[in-house]
Figure 1 (cartoon, rainbow, N blue to C red):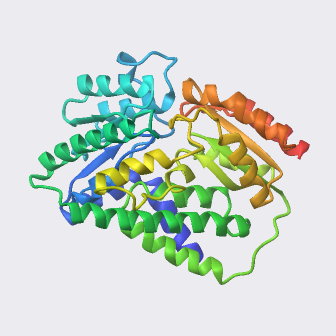
Figure 2: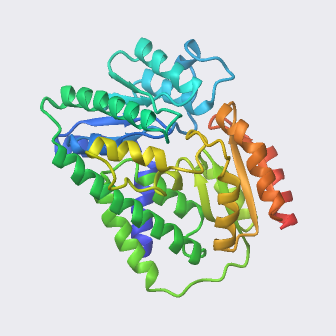
Length: 375
């Protein structure tokens, strides 16, 4: 049963366009692209549409996007733009782009100019997120997104439907956190690629369906004894770490991911939408207030390094990796402080740059090999 569920997650993760297109046709629904790093998926779900994570991809030749972005732009944004321009995303009825970085701001305007067949919904997540004025601002932004989705839907999005979606999403977050714990205690059954596929597959099917898969997987994992892994247990942080080549390099060096603070993975699930709030939109805004350990969510105390140390202790990890997305200013500002906090706690840690266009992982491979020998 476990292998069957893992294979289903793998199929979804490796065939996103096919899975999304078939779902749209079968269920006669619309799909909305969710550009990283964070977005109000609950509103899309409440509208009866499918939110689709647009996290770039691999083996994508950049051609058309060169007209819009310089070479020193983060590869994820470059690839999202390329896939929008070359028709890969034509099954989408709109995209939501969050204004979290200069690159994402540029992507929004480039998208508006270049990808005219897929409407843009642009919103801004405030950095003064813990102040009431910041929460109020985000509520207004969410109202704007809701209005645009209602135009696409052709009818209002009801408050009760948003509340139902929040409930489903919170259940899914809980199940994902449970999976993270079970994967860490079953590091032989759940290898690095398995773990990545479970997270990645959640971006291409409704959360309700992914929740059903998760619940089955979690129940099956609970039935088998905890496993002792002969290699080293590590925690990883960054924006994204789903490159099969990099995951394979970890496997070759007997390094097992037992926890993460990745924007693409656990950051999406660590924080529930709270009950606090006058309505559903204020509840969603309060979730943004509560998120920690995420470079896009302003944190003057720079807590991520300390949070990683606590996670390492909890999961009995012996080392940490900071996978720095090349040309990501937010991550570059956080990395030195985060790495130093991990070192100060007495744990080995390395950082290296990654990008989705890099087909040659030679340097990274050498760094990981050396790191594995140190642990």
